[in-house]
Length: 456
Image (tube, rainbow, N blue to C red):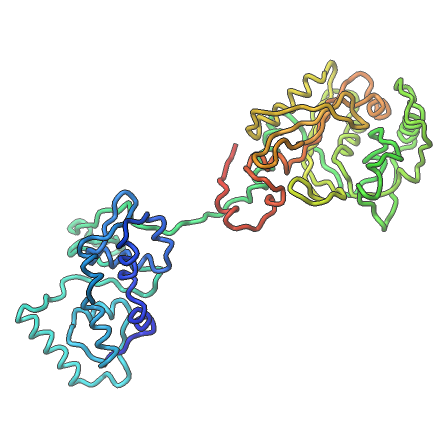
């Protein structure tokens, strides 16, 4: 005696997968890319092809005349399923074997009754002798689940090469099935680097290849290096609690050697030997000692100038900065800055524009704009703009020539210094075709899977 498995009962009630497929195709052909997304596609395609109900051409599947005929009637397999469900027995041995191979029927308890088995065997032999059914001539695929099915191949054709065939040379006498380029295959998502991480690494590699050396520093910085050494007055609005994160514990840190501190103080208050009048306000060590989360990596440039001295050099940093910004499509409270300086004699603002054009080329921006800008530590200064599809023209960062008020206290007498600080996240938005900077850190699996791997 037999009974339907849970899967068999489901198909008896809802129709076989291959029947569902031809019902879907009865109104016209459908692309295979759409069909393989169906939960039952692997089973349906295999058995529909075996039954001659569908044909695939140029990436589309369509129903055949045999398939249209099958829509209007019950197949032997369906009738056998109904018979087993109602009576627990069938005399259609071929359909029974198919159902067994598809794991749609199983022997019920007490099915070891030899008289019933003998009767089935006798009936099958009688029908074969009368020519009413054909003897089994081929293997029927074992259908264990809806995700891993190998449909029956035409008689005598081999679909898979086995180790035994190779070891004993059996492959020489076998006829192999032709490769079907239209057969559906599972989409494989190989491991790859997160798109923004990959972008940052590409920019870093290009700058190093151009001869730049990378600068490193700590997230926590003193107000001296973050602002004072960059000729930013202590009462500048950007120093306010609303634009920077200051530490509560510890609140203050140490200052560099007294000689440098004295030069910065003199420059801030009266211009020192720079030819400037300074800011004309009192400068205090207490304010300069305040510790903060650095608001710009330009502090690394100031430290590097004091260390490197008045000789040629090219340096860059790619690192995090922190600002008390309102988070939106182009702003984050924590983001990556791409800082750089070039030290040398006879450098001009024109050279700086060439450097910025290089960054535009790195991300494939053909149309860029330069707008005059103001920064306390550079003159002349400009801002770089690129156009994003939905956001329009977006500022990518600022650049300029370091002022004498910055250079002289740090020991730079004869050289000029080109400087820039770009928002790396905004450059990545342009390169990756994004319209919201928050997408760079998204856990959207489709976005991560569909972003191509680009190594430049």
